[in-house]
Length: 453
Image (cartoon, rainbow, N blue to C red; front, side, top):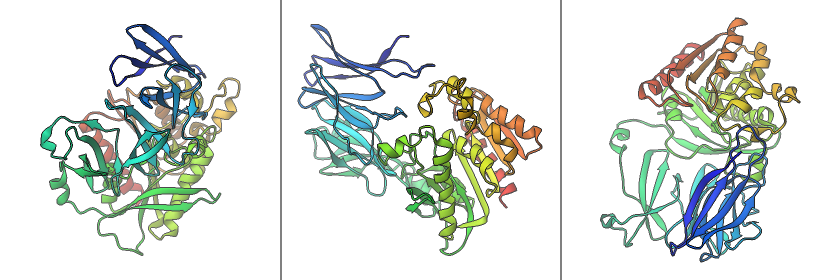
C-alpha cells in the first residue's frame, strides 16, 4: 500500500518545501501521515503522524511547521498542531478549543491563517505565538476560506497587497471582501439585483436542549411574511457530512423550502463541526442514536416555539442527512413526508464501497460484528416505515453508491410502502447538471405538496 503527496508549503525564503504525504484509506482501518522537507541539499524527514492531517504551513519564523490533526476516532482534523522543522514530537497547540479548525494555510509573509468554525459562523484566525487569535469575522455571516493576497491596486484598500476573502450571509450570495484595517469591506455585489426583487423571510440562529440535556444550536429560516404565533408547515433539514455544519449564509435548500410556506430548521447535531472535539467525536458508533435524537429534538423545539404545525411535519436531507432521513422514518411516524437524497441505508457494505471507505464512523469489522452495523441500517428496519418516502440518487454516485437507495426502495416497495425513487443519469454524489438540480427541487416540492398537506 503506497502513499501520496497531500499538500505542500514553501518557506518564506523559497529555499525549502514542506511536503505532507498520507497513506490512502482504502479498505484499511489505519491512517498515517508524514511531513518531509525538501531543499537543494536533499530531503529531510520531519515526523510521522499516526492520524489524518489537513493543511501545512511554516510557522514561528520557519522554526516550526503547523498543520491540522486530531486524536479523535472520527479522524477529522480539527486542532492546530506544530512540530519543530528539524524534527521532533508534534504538539497540540489548541487542546481546549471549543470550536473546530477546518482549514490552515500560510502566506508569503510567514503568517499562518486558520479558518475556524465557531458554531454556525466561521472566522479567519491567525496562528501566532503558539495560539489562535481572531483576525477577521463577517457580522451575521461567515468567512469562507483562508485569505489570498491581491496585486490589484484598484481594490483601494489602503494596502499595497490587500488580503482578499470570500464571505457570505443569509441575505446575500457569496461575495468578495478585502481587509480594511481590522474589519472586512465587501466589494462585490453579484446577485443583489435579483434578490432585491424577492421577498425573503427572516433567518435566526437558535439554541435549545435535547431531552437528554445536550445543548444544541441550529439555523431557522422563516417564510416571507412570517407572522409570530401562527403555526406553519415545518421541515427539519439535517446537513451532510456528518463532520460538517450548516453555515450562516445564503442556503438555497432552506430558502426554496421556506418559499413554499415552510419554517425550516437546520440542526447542528452531535458529529457537527464548530462545537469542540468531544461534540464532533460523539458521532463515532452512535450516528443512529445520538444524532437522531438531536435532529428529532429540533422538531420538538420548533413545535414548542409554536412555529411548526405538529400535523404538517417533514424531513429532508442529503448524504449523511439522507441517512438521517432514511433512518428517522424507521423510528417515528410523526413526519407526514420525507425526502432523502443519496442516503446511507445499509452500513455494512457502505463502509467498504464508498470511495473514501468511511471506517471512521465505526472501525469494527462488519463481518465479525454484523449486528453493530445492522443496528442503524434502515434496510433492516424497513417494516416500521409508514411515512411516504421520496428517494433521490445519482446513478454515478461513488460516495454513497446508488445500490444504497435501490435496495431500500425495493424493500419498501415490496412491502407495499409509499415510496418513489428518482435516479439521475451520470450524476455523482449530487447532480452537476442544472436541469437535474432543478428536477431535485421540483420532486421535493411535489412530494411535500402531495403528502404534507
